[in-house]
Image: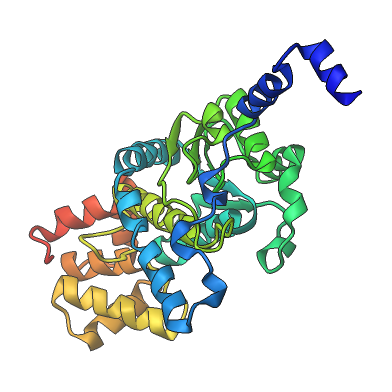
Length: 325
């Protein structure tokens, strides 16, 4: 009966043709979900061999990121424009991708003295330490979370999703784009659905994971590298780094205080003791201390000079003349 139903409804061979059409309609399998031939029978391998396989696969990450430098550069330019015009660079993600965004954003304050990079994670704060996989399936929650931080069209949204299909991320990207904000995507899947909502898409293709579907591995490493590049290059362009020194480092503990004194000493030629005294007089503000040491001016005058300049590094470079590398 089943055979006659198939023949009568679809004609000879029609059932097979319908099956092929159905398969063609299925979305392509995400590269991050595929089985990696290099890791077949991984559970039967020795400890050393498992580690060698993981390490060998990890070596694919940096070249994959390098191939996306033109796209990363375009996003940095968008971020610089957004921040200069009063906006922020906002990372939006779920799971590993979202945690990486929160991590990178949280370190921008201590490293660069900037709150212009913000991380939004589905299910936060609980999702920071626990896996809450269901939250990534609610696109409306992304809109609520972005509204909660006051997201506006002046901000730049970076949607992060290893496979590029998280409804939470896509929902936020779609909403941000409708309101007129610049929207970019970061994914490791060249067929990612989120590409439709991104003005620029960064896609380091690292291939299938050693443990199929565990995108915290190569995909996570690639995303971490890209986020580091985005935030660091953006802050350099905004004048928050002089040469390769963290001149806006927040001197909030003993380690960072010593680091600030060392930077001040290296850039100005002052002794460590002198540098410490100037830092104290500057009220723990390294750019102010540098200008005080170079120009031999009081704190208030140094603060005023820095406030007048749009770019702290440019003001300091001009005051110092030839800067040590």
